[in-house]
Length: 291
Image: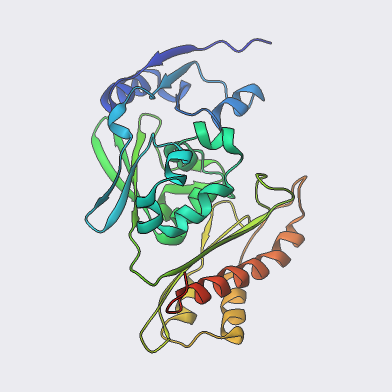
């Protein structure tokens, strides 16, 4: 059965918002189309209007701003993957980008599209959750900022209203000497992760942990920020036993689901292993002269 919808191109965020408001929940934003088009093809999304935002050239920026790396919603994964500014300012994001799908997906997919799709095992939402990124959205009443933890609501669901669009995301920039790691369990390269772990660690001059960030994916309906693990590591000297304790703490209360790829029990057993691997590598990379 043919899918029939109207197609309109917006040239500014305000024009996109106006089109969304006019059509209510029957409209969807499209940029790269790497997430939306499969949903339409499978009959899981049936919009009456597609609002193409590719012509909004103002959303193609990558820049440092007020201690953050600010990225416009329309920046392609491939652009970020090859950006020296991303590697210098947010190496965890740089590490995760090559793991997204395949080259074709990275050539077309956008950072705003990945965040708005809110797949709980996707790499960019996991990095955003790990680092406490800020998402900026625009709507009929102006703009508002949302933390990643508030932006992701549940599976494939965000706090975006039907007449709002995501325009930029801001990641905190990294201080020199921060160690990062992104580990994911996949059946083959480019597949959706079964579980994943993102970690960022900074050491004090005495070798103790001065800053710790950890997030898990594939263990809940959204990426999960592991606050308990971060608190356990803070101010302590890293070692195998401490890292093992932190990895276990990160997985307390996780609630994975079973699907055709893996059972909930398998995800539950793999989560602490990948949390430990990510923390171990991040600590190793945080040591002076390593990175």
